Image (cartoon, rainbow, N blue to C red; front, side, top):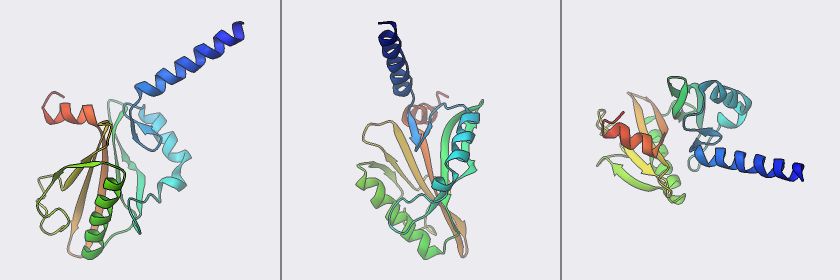
Length: 169
């Protein structure tokens, strides 16, 4: 009987712990201790250095991808695995948008020329999505100049993002 109660307690404990954690990306969750996030990155390094957001796209999670504040994970940045030409950057942007929309993410903001890195206003986000459950905000931005570009995909916790945008944080 005691074993049954112990099993029930452990099930409830771990279930409630997982419900309280908001996933950012893969096994990373919002407010994860940064030390645990680094271990997760190291443990899954092979998988996380070849992430696809659409056909023929390759992104990577790197050590600098883990953005923390006071020792807790607040966002994750992925960027294109290789440097891209201007044409490749445009293709990545188009394919990434199609990928997120296929996962039922809603586009909540997009610059007029979001798919044209040369025309994107640098001081504004390029394109932003929200997942169907309103738990995650994803931002996709091109960066670069001349013949070398990268595409960055950033995951934020939805509630944290809204508070930050309102100046409450």
